[in-house]
Image (cartoon, rainbow, N blue to C red; front, top):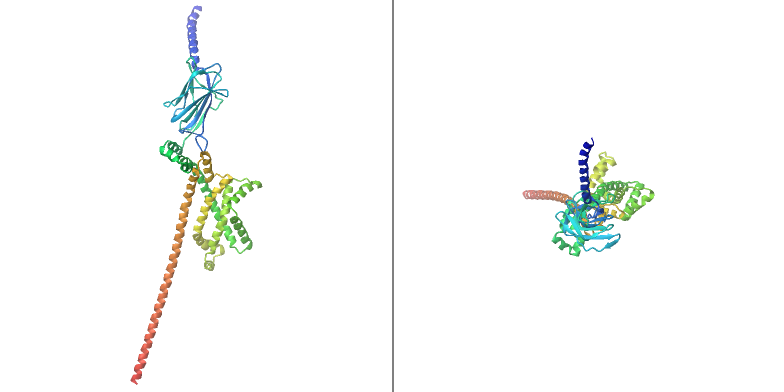
Length: 467
C-alpha cells in the first residue's frame, strides 16, 4: 500500500512543484505596480457640455505608482475608433504630491493604433503621479462609456497591466456627434474657412462653424416661439372680439371696462407687463408654469390691439346691413355672426396679420424673465462660443416668418384694393352708360318735338296761303 502511494504521490508532488514555479514566473507579469485613478475628457459640445465622439477634445489620464514599485515605460491605449489630429500633441507631467518634477522625456504618438508611449530616462518611483494630457484627440463616435487601458514595464523589463481604481471616476461618457457637429469639424480643417475667420468682422458676426453648430439649438427656440404664437394669438383673438363687442355695446359699464382695458394695455409697454406677471404673481402665491404665463401675457397684450382692429372693422360695415338683417327676422346675435363678422374678417385680415407679426417678434422680450425661446436659446450659444453669429442666425429665423407674412399682407391689401377699385370703376361705367342713355333719349325726344313743331308750322302756313 505504501509503495502504491509513493508511486502516485511522487508525480503529483513534481507536478505541484512545476506549477508553483510557473506561477512564480508569471506573477510579475500580472502584478499591478501602477493604478489609474483619473480619466477625463474636456467638453467639446457648446450647447450641452457633453463629450462628443469623433470631435477633437483634450483627454487627461493619470496613474499613481504603487508602493515598492517603479515604472520605466508606459503605453496608454485609446479605445478602438479613436484618432489623433495632425496637430495633436501630448504633455507629460510627473508629480510628487503637488510638486511638479522636471521631466525631459517626450511621449510618442502611434496614430495607427491610437496609442501614446513614453520611455522614462529615470524610473518613476513609488508614490509619484504620472499625468498624460492628450490634446486634439477624438474618441470613438458612439454613445457609451469608455475606459482607457494602459500597460507599463518596470526597470527589469517585466510588463504589467495598469490597474484601474474602480472607486474613482475613470469612465468617460461619450455621445455620438450630430451631423451638424461633423460639418463643423470638417469646416475647421478648410483653408478658406481659416482665411474667412482671419477677418475680425466676419469671425465675430458670420463665423461658418458657429453658424452650423448654432442652427440646431436656435431651431429649438424657433419652434418654441412659434408654439407660443400659435396658442397665444387665437387666445388674443378671443380677447379682442369679446372686448370689441363690449366697446360697441350700449351698456356703459361694458363700454367702460373695455375702454379701461385697451387704454391701460396699449398705454404701457409689454416689457413692463411681462415683469408684473412673472414677478407679481409669485408674490400672490401663484406659481404657474412660465410658458403658461408667457402665453397669457402675450395674448392679453395683443388682444387690446385686436379689440380696436375688430371694432373699427365692425363699425365700417354700413348700417343698412344691420337693418336688412333685422328686416329678415334675424336677432342681434345672428346678425352679428352671420352677416357682420364675415364681412369684418375680410376687411381686418391684413391688419390682424400685421398684429401677429408684432406678437411673434415680441416673444423675444420673454428672454428677460428666463423663458427659453428663440432669443434665449441664441443667447446661450453666444455665451458658450463668444461669437455674435448665433444672433445673426436668430435674425434669419425671425425673417423666415416675418418676410413671407409681410409679403402676404402686401399682396392681400393690393388684391382687396384692386377688387374695390374694379367694383367702383364698373359702377362708374354703369352710371356713365345710364346717363348717356338718358341723354340720348332726351335728345331724341327733343328732336321729335322740334320736328313736330316744324311740321305743324308748315301745315298752318300752307293752310293760310290756301285761304
